[in-house]
Image (spheres, rainbow, N blue to C red):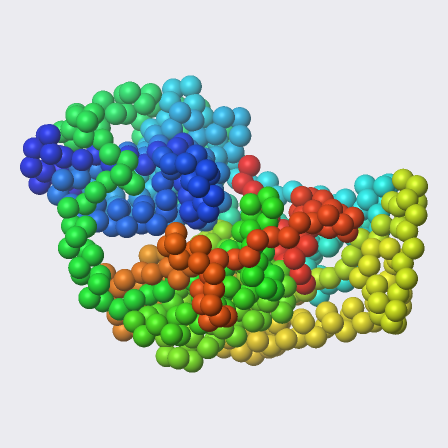
Length: 563
């Protein structure tokens, strides 16, 4: 169907709406808690609004089409994937165009270009590039640097793929580390290439040619079939407004679009069952898990359990979506969350885990008890393994002339102190704990995934998988985004996704959030974070900045950036 035919149903040139998605203005997956931060991103598009408005706009006869400014927006590849899926779905009903000044400028921009190909027509500025040169995965080992300043890292792990400690304790890159990281990079690029090829109607080999010859000139990109037109923003908009029968005043950001069906939609959804959404975001810790001093969200097991208990008390809730975007952390906290999920399932309410950019180690532990797991192709997940240890700082104290004397009462007192090295007895106790945690993790994961332990164990050993590979190995059930998670939760509960009312358990009103809790059964905000002032705490901060997990035995050993 051509553009003219698609927009024939519009009433008049003045009544139509041309939607805009400008990623340069920002994209939010989580609403800022800080009012000042909220003001700073006032014009940013929120994912929840994007999902809803695209769905409504697809059937709105006033909507002529969509223009996407497809540039990097500081979001992980998994979020860009979901936006691309939303644009592609919308394009089945209305015309879509994507443009960018450049898809990367002497830098890789594979996620943004992959998103752009979700549109029916792709433009690039004459002086721009199409830089889709794959992915670089970097492994940095800092042991030599630490030794120079008098710090000795001592860590134990289960098993060879649990490589977080390798960053600080390994002399060389291990074969297992290199194998895992290589496959992660390969999987991410293979999925991106396959998606681009499908959307552009190209064979995979031609897209790989573009990847390997990147950065491409606009002319070369057109020749390969990756781009349709070369032009500036004003030329894109002039073409769109003319062909779609619209004026500049007809432009509306997607998140500012107000569908005529809003009231009817609210009435319709109020008649359906409720799907509760509970979030697990950030490193996993025991207790309340307030945001860190740096503003990072931290997932406290007490809060997640509190929200899931609120679900149990709400008779209107018929299903739950557990949103997990966490690199893991405390093994005890992760197990507590899993138990809370199982209690919801035992009440007869299905639970679907929806994984974000990362749901690994403790994040996977929290999710694995769900009825089904939905992940994006680029989600980092798995990492079923354990690590623990410490930095010994005695040499550092000696170098800077500080005197420290530790007085210990009890045979194991100071076992994890940075003042001294592990003794043989300490190592034996640490190994005992690591074995117990690993055995519990793998046994429960096998039980939750319906596998024999012998079948799951080769997939564990601390290995990180992309969502795409995790699906192949049975660690997740579906590859997709929010919409698929809602559909699966609704279907499992015998509900119509179109009439399901979505309710976020963590969202409290302003007044409600200020009121003190009356008991442990009350929903409340997380507690205020305590300051970190000790020498060990400062070292933990430095380790975190360098990439080492400091929140517990079940932590993700890697972060992948597409550059």
